[in-house]
Image 1 (cartoon, chains in turn blue, orange):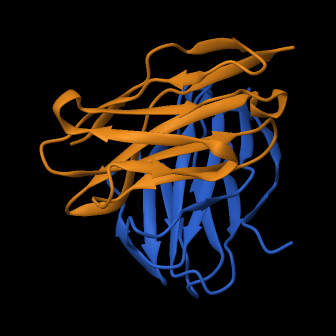
Image 2 (cartoon, rainbow over the protein chains, first blue to last red; image 1 turned 30 degrees about the vertical axis):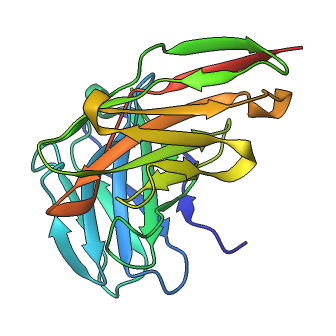
Amino acid sequence: GAGVSQSPRYKVTKRGQDVALRCDPISGHVSLYWYRQALGQGPEFLTYFNYEAQQDKSGLPNDRFSAERPEGSISTLTIQRTEQRDSAMYRCASSLESSGDYEQFFGPGTRLTVL
Amino acid sequence: AQSVTQLGSHVSVSEGALVLLRCNYSSSVPPYLFWYVQYPNQGLQLLLKYTSAATLVKGINGFEAEFKKSETSFHLTKPSAHMSDAAEYFCAVSAYPNFNKFYFGSGTKLNVKP
């Protein structure tokens, strides 16, 4: 399909391990967003990119979290030294342009469980 | 910063009845407002959005919402519920200078009874 895809869909890891979550946006979309969604809550903004440039990373909880989009397409969210509190659904979205006028299309998410 | 409050984490209606999902926002500048729907194991899908044009916004699947500045509200309605409307609904707000930074509410799960 032509939607936003994320991999893996489910990730179980042990505390202290590093994880990398991948997002493949809709082809041609300039902007890419990462959100975290805890159980029973709405998505919480983490960071976003225009092309390969990270425009806002104010939502990243701490320096264990980082994201990149080196070629302006696929993006990776990396969590180092995972902790149990990192367990959540991580969602990626993309939009044609970087304005609120443009719809953000969401992927199915990656469910991360840290044991 | 902006914020959203969705009253009622669970709403149950009968098929054919009016659907009303409440959303109140907080923003010191004129907001953009959105409603998204989430079906199980799927991503969020945009239902409708308000971006400072008409205050009554019509969306997909027969849903609509009205922006009321005096009440800081953006409630979602549908005249007649269908079984297929059962899902989780999220209200979101964004505003200048970061229109693409969305703040979501905690969601309302809609149950439709036959």
